[in-house]
Structure formats: structure tokens, C-alpha cells
Amino acid sequence: MSRYVLGALLGCAVLALAAIPASADTPTLLGVSRDWSAFTSGTGGSKMCYALTKPTSSKPKAHRDPIYFLVNDWVGRRVKGEPEMVPGYQYKDGSTVTATVGGQSFTFFVQNDGGAGAAWVRQRADEERLIAAMRSGSTLVVTGTSKRGTKTTDTFSLAGLGDALDKIHAACGM
Image (cartoon, rainbow, N blue to C red; front, side, top):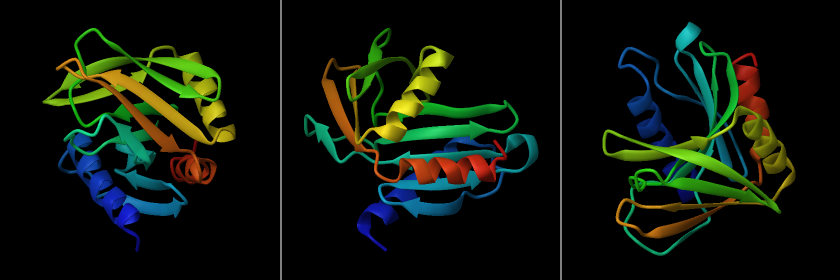
């Protein structure tokens, strides 16, 4: 198993365990598709499925917690394909995050919770457009600003995304 896959598995387990109640199931790997890994966790209305990847490059070089870009399916909320950025730091309050695929840009809102930062697409219609752009694109570039004011740029490969999304949608029945 490659270092990337092992790192992704460990990171996924940490993310999933932090995001779900203690009584929920341990994440189950659905498969690895090039640069993306697909997982499922929980049962019934608390079931979630997600695809995630780590950046191929991050600038500037700085100590950060693990960095991930995820696409989530939430069975109980009936939400399919919710993109999420986990930057490995807390975002600057009131800032926005920008994700770019090809020539298209998408705005995310930020939320810091429990010492960690995350960002989600501002408009639901943009989530669907972003996923479509990601399926046909080769790289995703996400820029954000840390609480300390440092602008970061993370680049993610989109190789394998389509297969990973197909796996999570099938596993969550979406």
C-alpha cells in the first residue's frame, strides 16, 4: 500500500471519527481510485459516504494539520455531493475560500469549530456546478486565509474522482 493511501486512510479515520457520534460504525474503505479514496460510515439515517483526497502541493510550506478536500453524501439529510475543504488550520473569521477548476471559480464560506477550520460552497446550485467541473477537470486549486493572515494555496489532483463519487453515491443509495 502506498504512503499516500496509508496517509489518506489514517486521515479519513480521524476525520470520520471526529465528525460522527461515538456509537457510529468505524469508516469502511469502499476503494481507492487513483488520487481519491471512498469511504462509508454509520447506518440508517446517520449513514454518510465520502470521497477525499490530499493536496499534491501546498503553498506556502508551513506546519498544518492534515489537509483534505472531501465530497460528502449524507443519507439522513438527503444531501448528495456536498464539497468540503479541510485546510489543516483555522480560517480567518469572516473570510471566504475560493476553489478553481479550469476557468471556473467557486466561493466557499468558512466555519471554525473546535479548533479546526472547514469551508463549504456558499450556494447549493454551485455545489452541482463544482462537482461537474471537477469530474471533467484535472486539478482543483483552493485558496484561503488562515487566522494568522497567511494566504494558502492547495492544489488537488482530480484523477479518480469520478470513480470515487460513483462508489459513494452507490453505497449511500444516492
